[in-house]
Image (cartoon, rainbow, N blue to C red; front, side, top):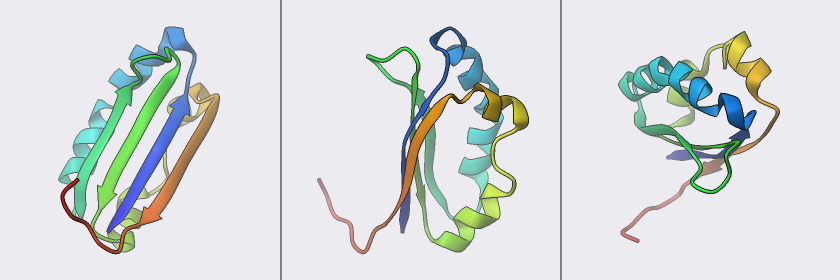
Length: 94
């Protein structure tokens, strides 16, 4: 299993518009083969931060979904980012 997690930074005044523009991407990801969870959300304390969380069955499913990445408009809006991929060898209740 793979987890992709981190954050994106956008202009605080543009965050809600950015997230609204991601609705179709979230819907597509959740419908994609191998997607176990996919969410983008506004951070509760940082007005310019968007939290990223994805869970995939395996790398081939993740790569098949990724394609070309964010649209040009989305890419331009991102002023900073820190997103990493984690390979999970086991899981259990928290």
